[in-house]
Image 1 (cartoon, rainbow, N blue to C red):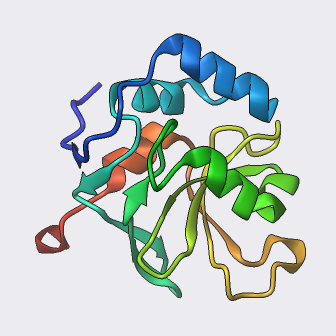
Image 2: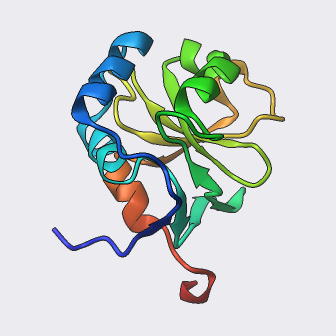
Length: 150
C-alpha cells in the first residue's frame, strides 16, 4: 500500500484504545478499523490536502476539520448529538466543510465503512442529500488533493 500524503494540524489530546472503546460503548457502535486507526493516530484535526470530489454535478468539496474524541471544540460526541438525524439513518458525521455540510461514515451493514457527503440544506428524503464518495475511509484520505493537483 502506498503511503498517504496527509498532514493533520491541530493539538488534540492523544486518544487511547481504552478511551476509544469507551466511546464506542457510549454510542453503541463499532467504528470501522481504518477510521479507528486514524483517530488513534491523529484524533481529528485540520487536513492538508483537503479538497475532494463530490460528484460531476456537485463539483468539489473541502474538508474543514475532522472531529476528535475528548475535550475539544469539534468533539465527535457533540456532533453526533447535533446531527442525530444522520445517525438515525446509519451514518456518523466525522468531518465538516466550511459550509457546515458533513462528511459521514456508514455504520449499517449495507454502507459500513463507506464515506458519504451529506448536504444539510437539501431535502433528506430517500438519502437524496447523501453523496457516495468512497468505499472506505482510507480511500477517502488517498483521494484528498491540493488545488494545484487538479
